[in-house]
Length: 144
Image (cartoon, rainbow, N blue to C red; front, side, top):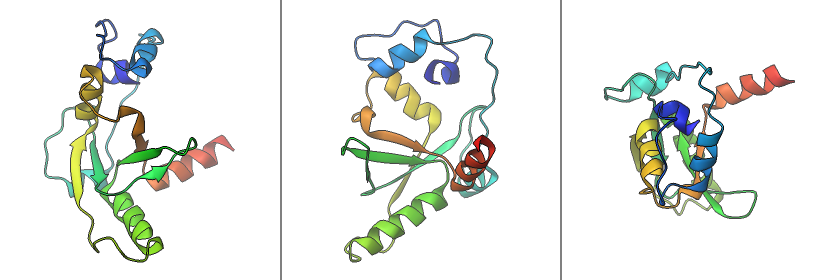
């Protein structure tokens, strides 16, 4: 997805470019056509101007999940509401030791991917994109 999103399939990776990005570049098919669209809910919550094909991402401070390998995964939510619900669940399961309101940082898909490309994003292996919960349910229904 990375080289497709940036539409830079012919650029050369450098020594800081993560292996996942180098591998994705090798599998680029120039005939692939797609369009990324942010949900209305994500756009209505943010007062930002986005380039075409870019979407807002929401990072909830102090929120991480255990991955299949036991290592922490830092979720990047496509909708603020999903991040807030996940934070509330974590807070409740931890005995309400976390502050009541989460601290949420907003970034964009292109910012994250460009930092991955440059090798300046720390913990890139821990980042996990979380789609809107309704979209995940619909996708599961379509594949069954």
